[in-house]
Amino acid sequence: MKITKMDYAATGAFSQTITDYLAQNEKLKPFYNHFPSIDAFEAQIKEKEFTVKQRQVLHKALQEQYSSISEISPKVQQSIDLLLQPNTFTITTGHQLNIFTGPLYFVYKIITAINTCKQLQAQYPNYNFVPVYWMATEDHDFAEINHFNLFGKKYSWETEQTGAVGRFSTEGLDKLLEELPEQFPVFEEAYRNSKTLADATRAITHSLFGEYGLVSIDGDHAELKKALTPVIEKELTENLSHKLVSETSAQLEELGYKPQVYSREINLFYLKNGLRERLVQEDDKYKVLNTDISFTLEEVLQLAKEHPEQFSPNVILRPLYEELILPNLAYIGGGAEVVYWFQLKKVFENYKVAFPVLMLRNSAMYINRGNASRMHKLGLKPEELFKPYLELKKYLSSQLHEEELTLEAQRKVVEDAFKEVEELAKTIDPTLVKAVAAEEQKAYNALQMLEKKLSKARDNKHEQTFKQLENLKEKLFPNGSLQERQDNLLSIQTNNPDFIPALVDAFEPLEFKFTILEEE
Image 1 (tube, rainbow, N blue to C red):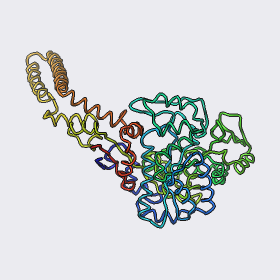
Image 2: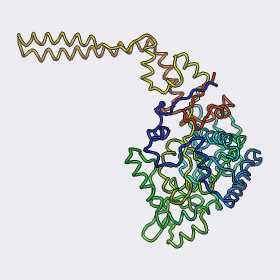
Image 3: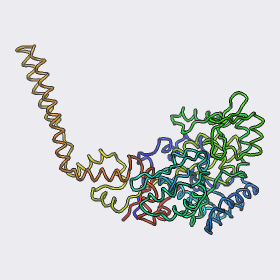
Image 4: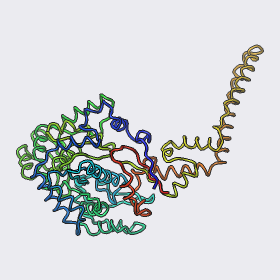
């Protein structure tokens, strides 16, 4: 496997906010704690406070959740048990429960976490580092997770279930499995033998990444939610996070950066089976939108004390909840995630919770042997593929010893000729000047038409070359976006079973370079 690295900025696929962050632009420094370098983790370790009791609660919850796995990988069990030790810390990434893992970046996030732990272990041998996948089980946007693309075809899971997707029964996924072009044992086993989507996703990540000690955690757990009770109370009575996030968002906007998320006055949902709806305050009542459920202040605060599991944090409070229940040092996310974490720093400071190191996940493009062959036949390098199609087409034309076709010189000759005719008309009959101008326009239009015809004729000479370029761009940038945002793991792993180990070998999390993997 040939590996090529390039700067994120050079891909043209990442926001100015992210490229400024990676360049450590001074303007962004107030919005994060430590920039992600190997040395920064020493300070982060000192700042992270996590008690023995918190570790015990976490360990017990994970043991309960992993009871759905018939045979736990020794590496995963070791990771879970290490969390009881005061010198053990986590590196966390999170994502929705996309069926069949969804787009490739799901896998890239997890491998970034795994490799970060490896690098930290080598640098800080007196500590233990556990990679964690935070399962977004409480998310209720089913339309975002119910489909995936495989070999250019979209497959969808249809169900009438509502509420937190992690609680969904896997009923109906068996029909989807039967639609696939072949059997995929990891997913067959998970979806046919798991009761819920959360259990199935845990089984999938365990099968794919168990050998690397990855721990998948479900925050939808009564004992874990107790850590959120003080936050729920302040959220209901003070709208605290809304005030703090609004201030930070305004500061980012003043600097020319667009906020990624917008806060609500109450950043909580009410959570029950089949239901996850926003909590809103109307006069002296706390109402659950789209239902008849409402509470007085006293009732809702009592509920927070007795049943915090009936509250679900939204995108603003979920990161804080995560950091309250994990001995976490860093959060790994995509570009949009890193930006919205910038908006949360004041929330963490207010609750006196260490703000984690923010890391951009590894991004990659995979070029299989067939596409690599096409690329080389076209005389292109991997990093050149990020250029727009028309720019590459122009480049290939020059390589074919064809300069850009233009009749500009001829237009200039015609223009000069008509100027002479116009001067002659003025001396003989000035009324003919308009007729001269009209004929000049006709000649100009004729030349323009001929230029297009000549250009098209020349393009037809090299139609096959340009078609190959167009097909290559579509394969590697489906729908005009990065491959990782469209293609699924199975589209590569089916033909290359060693794809995940290849990623583990290639990714350098703290290097912050876009990775291109090319089959040789």
